[in-house]
Length: 245
Image 1 (cartoon, rainbow, N blue to C red):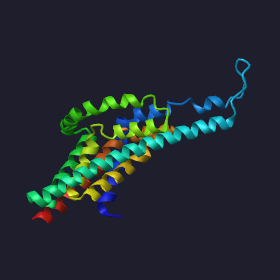
Image 2: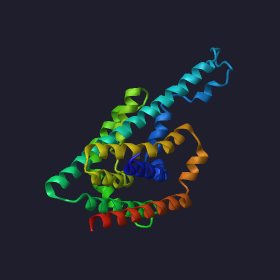
Image 3: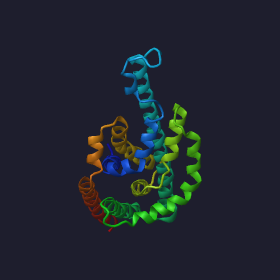
């Protein structure tokens, strides 16, 4: 696997706690779109009605799983689409403006350090970058109301695609890697693998493993992950600096 793609995947994993905070509510809304399957495990008749069979409960569980998967397909597809746009922008900057890709990598490494500081809540400069994204989000977010309640596959896919544009410092920092790639294909691939890295945390949340969720959102765990990102950012900065000079 390309090192940039692997790095993007790891960034998604390390930012899992942030993903749960940012997108956990949407995932919860998806899993609440259909009745809870455990309600059907009790086979006692109510109001002389026939009890719902266990097979019905299983089908509801499968329906919920399908909604969550489609939501994440939509979300990751949006990441890849944005990555393609940013990667194309990087290629234009490299070819027409003459900006060296090593210079763009210096920028992406700097953003990685800022991301670590942001996740560790030591320096919140990325809040300013998120604020810029809120201007675009103001026009996109009303579309989400058309996909609620999320009770069909197309609505789940649509909501995921819309939610992929949510202003997020984690996403924006990874987009700088897509920018530094200088390629539409690589930019899209970087964001696709980043999305795959965020997938385990959100799937875990939707399945209901509260113990894992609690671990990922613990301040101590988030600070350790933040330090790892800062270390990775410093290493990437040093490599890009030597490539440039």
